[in-house]
Image (tube, rainbow, N blue to C red; front, side, top):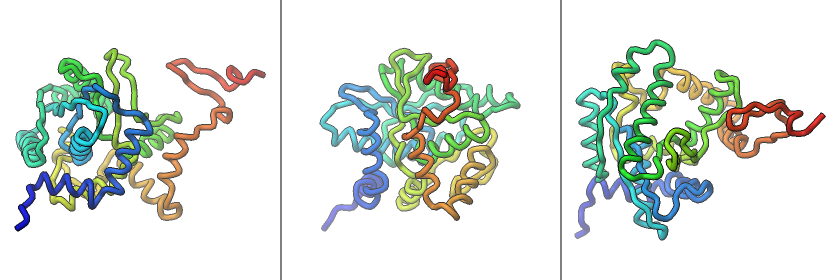
Length: 280
């Protein structure tokens, strides 16, 4: 009689079997293409409690088991002031999926709730800084975040339309404020729709944002709510009606920038004009 699998084993098996083509393969492609891991790394996988970061944790566990380049993992959860039921959900999912999380507290929600202008931007910056600091304290040299393909495309579009700049979200980034620390995004080539499919297949429930600004809002299953990022989701959805490959085109564009067609560029904080590069 075949043994009954645990929910964790079913979720892990679905990554390798049912969703291998759309989850495991693009995850491995990103790790290799952008050289995101190295032997003897100690990586803090940052878990917010959402579907993306939890899937990232499971993928990193599987990679660690299969890799011939040994590295260590720490699964880091920052509680920025979650409501008790939200923190409880994170802890329950960690137990269910056998992720040995390290949880630490901060007062970020108390700070950002008092800010009227760009509270989400401030919250993201403060959360990342806290994660860097805690990861460094625990002896890590990298933090891994759960940003995926759609985040990359939406960020690129949002920077162009609202930030007046052509700027993408890189797959890895050296920290300016925490020397020796690097940020990596192993889900860089994984699509959000496939993450949602994996979540639903395994009947899992995760946090949405859960901050003070959104916890009262009913969570939308397709991830669409009210923010500039959600506006990008809706815009891209509309554009897909006439160009189904619009997101792939934007993603490909950030890998093939034609610098000689740019009027001006900014490098390491300094601005250069086209003529600085190519003369008069």
